[in-house]
Length: 282
Image (cartoon, rainbow, N blue to C red; front, top):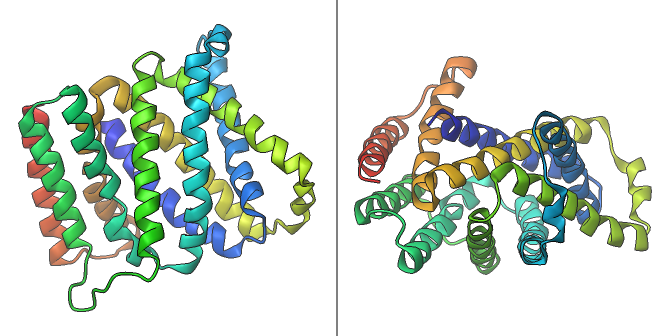
């Protein structure tokens, strides 16, 4: 439970700093992503240092090929998302950020049925309530880039389903290590061919600060996310992740003195109750 909340808090901070790093970055999109994955590779090396890793996994073409396919989807939507986060406000994108969770839960349950119908229902209800609370209906209108936003959500759904499928045959830490090694190699080739490493000169202090924080928090959050999926399965791991939203609001209040609104307090109470019911009947 603690890992779910902590991972979600890290992801929240990572998203904010990722947006900030994008706004101060003058790097090509591929190099921008490469910077974050080098950080992830460093974390993977630390994980290998403290635990045993079987290098024979790279001989399993099914797993490696599956991760490569997952990464193609990942890099595809990341390329679009970098553009979206430059063009749109986070508040505009937030109502749509959890749509992939709805798609994933419904598809996964219909195929594998590895959670109770009550847990599935509670998960979808939590997501819908969270989306509704993030919309200001007085000012609401569909963003001009809605097609790109929905396409990104579809790509994330496919990537997530593939990730969870291959986690059934691979330990979470091993998946993270393979993922980081493969993505660095995949990014290295186009960077060398297109001679993009000269962009290092364009990295300023602001980007290094924001980029390092976002990369570290997002990569650690991804590692915790893989653990949750391995431990609790698809539906319950998504359900638990929503506890982090309330904890994040509380965290901002305690340390930054930002008082939550009535709607935010009501959202925390509702989601906590629904998550509790869903987890009990998991």
